[in-house]
Image (cartoon, rainbow, N blue to C red):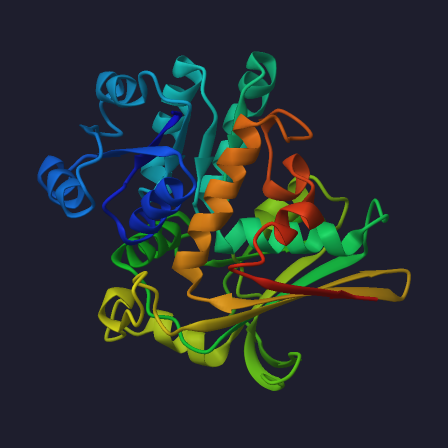
Length: 342
């Protein structure tokens, strides 16, 4: 049986990843820096193997990854954990997947490990999650036979957003790294700005319809999409209601709103991706439930495909580059409804 280490296993997203691995017949090995929480979580899910490790302790990471087939990093802030866990995966000679939504942390992974991972024939897939991975898969699949586009727009229609503690911590780290500025991808590069993000409207497919959105509400897609697609403009949008939720310190966590046996919240989402080239428009739309829960099948499907050799490249690569995007999305029909047009 193939063992897959989940670093940050007792976190909100980590728990979904552990359950998804077990459901697919892979053996989760629980890891994280808090040994007490690790043991408590292990006991609550039937006692899988646990190996405490700290991102600041290379030897502990080596012990945690020993004998594993792959590692999924679910422990943010990824500005602190991504590089040490990638290093440990390279030492162990195993694939690395993470669920980072932090723009700068993902950019660091691409920039810092591209050469070494390629030379080692290793596989490193950052942002294999709802933010970063899903948008990239949808944009890549929507492009179809196009090898480039004039622009990619990704609109997030979340009915609400109850953030985890990890989401809040990662956001705080990103704001510090940007000195409070916002970031966008324009004219082929990341651009930091001091002005406020614009408010506009977006015509989502029904039943959501026309909604007020925050324009240039940048997520990890502005790193993953242009990492392999020739597109100078990548813009992301967020429904105003969800943006208000994430900004408010009083918004409850998703744990408080769990509403089914899997621990998923009642949150629903619609991701509307539009790619344009020479006046022609193509579109991909994904619908589903709970942005944190859907990250688990995205990450675990990636692990399965890497371990079975169903990849298109090696090195540091985003979801849309390393996998057959349309086929990957089709494999997640239990978790996502996806439609294409144009």
